[in-house]
Length: 530
Image (tube, rainbow, N blue to C red; front, side):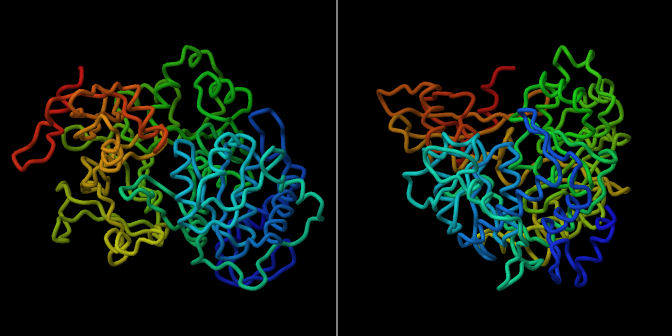
């Protein structure tokens, strides 16, 4: 682990890596290989099936696969698509693609096959790697336009097994020899929802990601043992990287099931996990929570949606002082954090704080004219951060709109207090944050208007008593038609993915409008029970 302490110095100067080459910049994958090589017999991964993988075995798989990808044309500037779940093969594939110099695009669960195909076409994908957990989706993708050549991470009946091909070669150094990866190169293009048919691709650089992984993670354990029970395509993947780079280990589960999570924490002596608030509530409500030994758990990171103060108090009572609330965005990454002793801090009208800026991040609140507002006055939250995106993939106008003079315009309305604590009170951008991602109403409305039974529609969100957001659709049917909720959900799921499928459907003779002629979503919310 002595190599890890010098990572900042490694980024600034030329250093020799464990592979014997010299480079002016060390990526997170370079650093990861050094950590894995320091103690190759150490156990670093436990799969959902119970297999235990050593550091040396993971290192060798990454190097072999990286070499195989390089032989197949994966170099700096190319893009590799990953259709993978929470598997050791999927994690190794990401590391290998980045090691070979490519950027990665992770196609997460909840996207429909046509959307995935459009994304792959947009990024000019060189290869698509598929693990054993996502083969059914891969079969849907294969006949669609825009899908690059597909390789399987293991045996399949539709593609060559690239792991078997890689294993035929000895482990060798993997570095793009023609043009080494630099700090400004993209390591990933992360996709969120969007309003243009193809979601927004957020370009994240190697330099900013490497720097973000060096940020201290209080209470995660020494060494950390991270439980990935949500998708590695999202924040769990970042926490997994953090744990491995700190000499820790990762326990993989295929998804979140509260009883399984409790049992896994006890059995595997997990120190840290990440949950969206709705998943945290399900954990608290499980009948086994009081009887489970959770003494190893020293940090539960939560965020992604607003949290209910009453449920956070319940969590603190049941789990102890282990809660760390995170506020961030895909465009800016982590912005602020609350620790266990800050969960009760509230502002105007009882708004809970989302904490203070993490080290290296600046937060300001401004009005529409760009004037910095005094403490306690709401305005748009702007962020200046070394971890921010480089821009949106192939969308320069949108990039200029969001990134201005070095500041990320978050679209969130909030205020700072005199002590630098941030409070979020509203959202400028119309977006519904659900478990698994973001739903943009305009995008879903455009899709619903393609349904033969829909004449007019509007989509709106609501929060329940626990601040969990839900998607609703109000529809004016075509005369003589009466679409059902099941019919609409199936239509949306097939074309956009289940993430966008509305939970309720309201059939109306006409949409209620505001004084300026826009759908009155406040009145529509009054139609909801309770």
